[in-house]
Amino acid sequence: MYETTIGLEAHVQLATASKAFCADRNQYGAAPNEQISIVSLGYPGTLPYLNERQVEYAIRLGLALGCRITRRSTFDRKNYFYADLPKGYQITQDESPICVGGALPVRYTNQQGEEVVRGIKIHHIHMEEDAGKSIHAAGEPCSRVDLNRAGTPLLEIVTEPDLRSAEEVDSFMSGMRQLVRWLDISDGNMEEGSLRCDVNISVRPHGQEAYGTRAEIKNMNSMRYARRAIAHEVERQIGILESGGKVQQQTRQFDPQTGTTSALRTKEDAHDYRYFPDPDLPPVVVTQAYVDQLRTSLGALPWDAHAELLALGVHTEDASLISADRMHHATFLRYAAASAAVPELSKLWVNRILPHLQERPLMISPEQLVDVQRLITDGSVSAANAASRLLPDLLDRPGDPHARAEELGLVQNTDTDFLRQVATEVIAAHPDKAAAYRKGKKGLIGFFMGEVMKRSKGSAEPKETQALLRTLLA
Image (tube, rainbow, N blue to C red; front, side, top):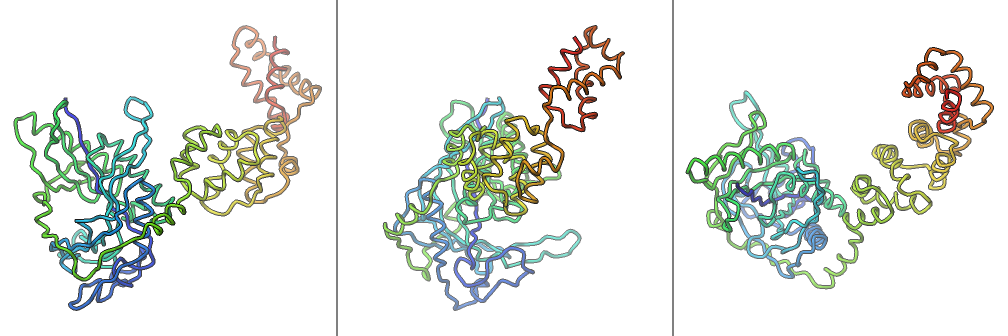
């Protein structure tokens, strides 16, 4: 038996207005090589200057994760040659990263169906800049380089080798995406490259203390692909060990078409990059007062929001969806404060209101939403009709819920004489089915309910109607 050990290097592109070390615009989707300048292109004699917002965002993330904030951090040059790295080096932090330690709380369901809640340990977070992008178009004789991304401010979150499965990698990256969006420091869009990760994987026999030799899979920006890549790489390494071989330390790439990984190059160590202090950037010195100010501004974090919703009686899956976005969570709490049945409100919220909020603002008032709930609890409108017809109509045209239910013909009829007359007519119209019911085919109650609903145009109150049908059919 073997144990899988995984460490991540997650890269978060920051949502700053300009790039990390120059004034070039930082925006996704521009035409190739439009957002560049002599600084981001690395022209001789040009000098970088620090983006203050990048420092702020790094500290905000570090505080949220419980990291120790380095009061005096420095920048270094990581030297390597690649076509999309115009300077021939990357400005990064090697010796003194801005944040050290900490952990990200994650919640996921394991393969045994059990819910797991644990903290994934962080080694450090450092600031750096992104490289450009090489475009390898099929059928073209050469590659193209788009340098719009060169110089984009990045945070690299380096975990301890603390993950043990693809499920934990998925939950970590999902949790990190939620957190950076919650803090409003990145859009976290993996499909646009705003959030991606390098996955370091090794295996070792159970009980062995020393880690196995790792392989790094680069630039995973899809969790579906990451899960497949991890599964293949674990199987590959175990196969090598079982056959008596040795795993090589490599950088590998994943091919989605075949579901396999292949070697790119022998894995570099730190000395291969010839790190040295950047002579053009002074140390970043932050005061304790500044750190405390940012700490105060954080407010509740996603896991705090989730726990608060659970305390209100919200189901854990609904709580996860509602707490996925800071503004949506705050809006829900405002409406929940007016409701006497928060768990039921959360169901309406998740199924009807959250999809609405993706497209336009919420115009219905808390009092109107509570009135919708009241119409359900007092039996005036069925829960199904309230969710599928009344609430969607009110979201488009806010107004008095009871009047709107009347207008839409959704108010349920509880008049016993009316229900008895309709039920009697239905039974009389289907004597064969009534006889079959009396002989033991009790499932036919659904048929009679459907016929009553047709004749009453959906207005018959379900519970009273069913009870009345059972009495008349007895």
